Length: 199
Image (cartoon, rainbow, N blue to C red; front, side, top):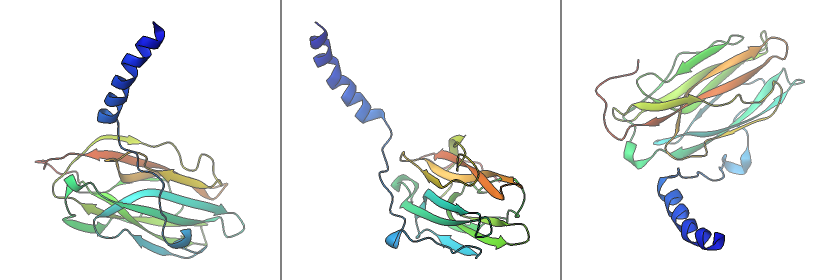
């Protein structure tokens, strides 16, 4: 009897899972030979190609290199339902040595990062490069867990499901460890134009 029930319900569960579960993004290509976008104690500017957004962030920490990190990012095309970006811009600078929270204004999605290292603070300032897609609006937003899990550890954050996008982040800064932990703001986007804006 148990085998009969398994044979009946297993195909139904498989079909339902295939119809209603989120798509999986698979492994990311961080660029040519997995090179870092920066060298220690230097500034950098990384932007995804037009029409793509950040889907993965990787970083390694070095205490001996000024308590700095090497960074790398992966991009993927935004869902076709969003269309092409209608405008892109750099957000306000988030100062070194402070905690901060920021999302892309005007319902934008994160499509790049810019950072400058400050040896006097042993930290970086950050800017998001954001792109808006027509008048689409975020919903079902949430914060990821902390990346890295502990100060000084390597970091590897990936978006595992399709149609979820990074809209911003909140960070904490340890004056003892001279390192940051990140929580990314992740949202879905509507398939229709919204009558309002997120400022």
